[in-house]
Image 1 (cartoon, one colour):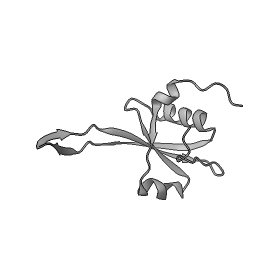
Image 2 (tube, one colour; image 1 turned 45 degrees about the horizontal axis):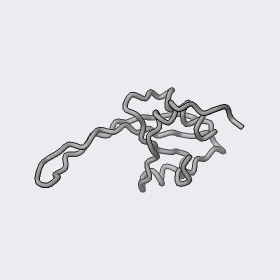
Image 3 (cartoon, helix red, strand yellow; image 1 turned 90 degrees about the horizontal axis):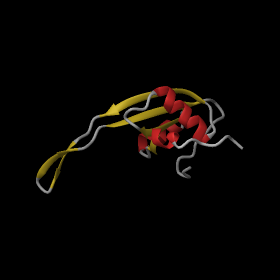
Image 4 (cartoon, one colour; image 1 turned 45 degrees about the vertical axis):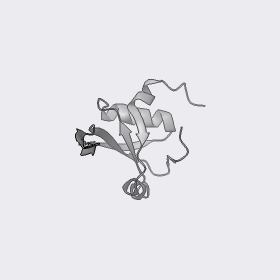
Length: 100
């Protein structure tokens, strides 16, 4: 049994991204997560390793700019989101459909 999971790890990883592109990336041992805007690569790596009990090879991050959308005829701006593409070591897997 792994040591106690700290609550701050749940603040770093917001949710998994389940899209066609993320599914294709999973075939290459990669998982995509939405993460906190203030999260750094070392924080993301530590959180994924502790929460899912896997070994992370590398972490790439990107900020997806929010789109302009109309709601009831009024233009609005969606929030920017930060995403992390986590590459896992060989032999490690994360099934994001099961949850934590």
